[in-house]
Image (cartoon, rainbow, N blue to C red; front, side, top):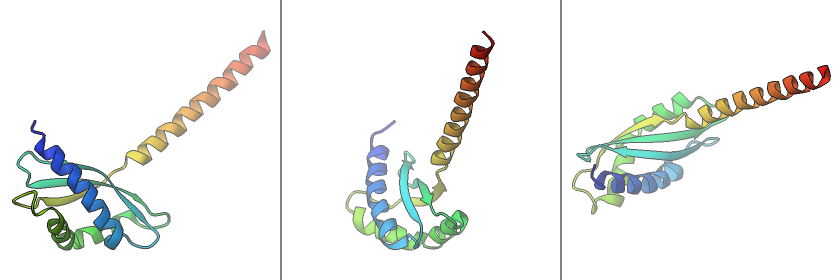
Amino acid sequence: MSIRPERLGSVIKRDLGKIIQKKYQRSGSFITVTKVDVTPDLLIAKILLSVYAPGKDEDAIFAYLEEQNAAIRKELADKIRHQVRRIPELHFINDKTAEHVEKMEKLFQKIRKERRQRDSNTGDEE
């Protein structure tokens, strides 16, 4: 695989993160660009976003970003136009990694607790 998509992905991640946080982040929410995957032909960029919005609907936040996709892409174009011939299409994807990690951590804590209880019960029997 060529290094060009990786480089472009890191440039998009940096610049798009600033754009979204500055203008398109609704109050009470925090949006982070966690990863950008660019296709080998450099025409599509899959943007993984981590959204922290307690008490707010994440789907509504993504709907808003999709509504603003053209404006966001234009602002990105203003920043990276000298680095690429065509600005890639932006596809926003909800990155659920943090939620998955939290769920797994709770499972591990439950296992540790059960193991301690089991070990303390076997110690009482001896």
